[in-house]
Image (cartoon, rainbow, N blue to C red; front, side):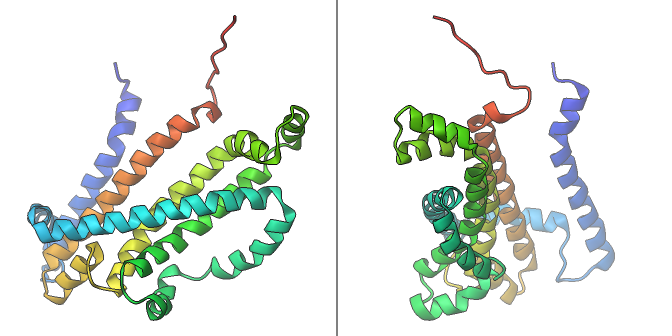
Length: 261
């Protein structure tokens, strides 16, 4: 039996979306301009977009780029962040580079990357990679840095090598912080993916968005914004569910079951 409080918590996101759509509908009716269609007009355009083979191929291409950029960034950034957290030498070398690149909007690098690599897949994936890497490195660094030295001393006393201590002690202890960085990186992957496609307009969700704008198909423009927003909400919810399972042991009130031989 679901309590009233739990039911409200579950319905809160849906109610917020419905409220936003209601405000949008009323505002569009009041303004009554071609460039600002009503929420119902935008929602009606979604099935035609998802039912169009070419549009669906473009959206899947965006998801593929995002998955590759995110995956490569995770594989590179987590080990680097962990090493920075446990080695002053590694941290001293990489910290200045990260401090210089962190404030720069990654989309601003797109014209330079296009000069080097063209406007193909590699350029877009590289921008996504850069957008995801920095928060993952930072949170991995903070998580590794917070690991108690006593745990590492105990591991060394048990005969664990430096690599074994990193994988069996530092990585599990830092995992909650790492996954927080990955969740932030997932959102940034979506943002940089769309932005890169709007600059290098060949294929993808960003390409559909701006082509529709050029042709004055404003209902399609707003429908694509809804689709991209739904993608973000869905990916974030799925990742949060995965995160909560992986680090359930770190949550307050969780009791680790004990077994006795």
